[in-house]
Amino acid sequence: GQQVMQIPQYQHVQEGEDFTTYCNSSTTLSNIQWYKQRPGGHPVFLIQLVKSGEVKKQKRLTFQFGEAKKNSSLHITATQTTDVGTYFCANTNAGKSTFGDGTTLTVKP
Amino acid sequence: DGGITQSPKYLFRKEGQNVTLSCEQNLNHDAMYWYRQDPGQGLRLIYYSQIVNDFQKGDIAEGYSVSREKKESFPLTVTSAQKNPTAFYLCASSMGQRVGYTFGSGTRLTVV
Image (cartoon, rainbow over all chains, first blue to last red; front, side):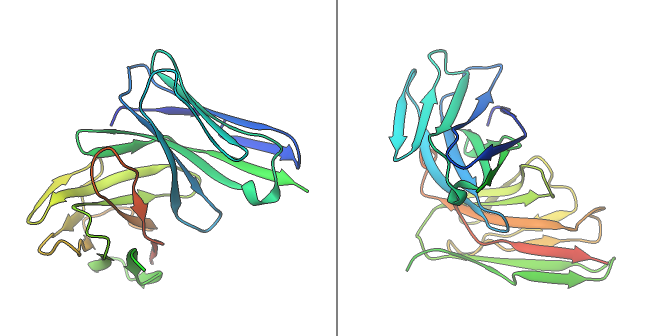
């Protein structure tokens, strides 16, 4: 896959605040996947985006793929303590996925 | 229930010893992958296999070896040539290139 960079590395929020993590690439991506890894756990696949400008929602989570297909974002509305964990973006190319370094979210009750 | 089983969950080995990590899936997925995760870092690809009896090196294959004799199984051997083997090892599988991965629960390897 193509190299993807994630920002920020860490985000601390108060419960109820919103959270956004960004995934950027210097090259055009054919796809983006998002995963969530709870502390001490393993990554769990959330969603895949493939179309330019695509927006998908899962309850309080909104995923976007940029018009130029070089960036993506995951936005969580009104965070809850169950949202804690590390969120990874990944790109699949030539049969393998390359992961970003992740954004670790902590939520203060 | 279908899934991926990695065993053991925790593994301790002495420096200089080879160790094999098990990964079994009953999802009927063609592709399988091994990733390494170090504390606070992302996932780095060690090896992957698209079909039985075939596999390719990932980004950090040195010091590791794999086999894919059966569709369900993709064991990873961490050899004594791996300079810094202590890490969290994750096995994954997928049906194809356009779907996300299903990960196992991982094996935490500590070499002392």
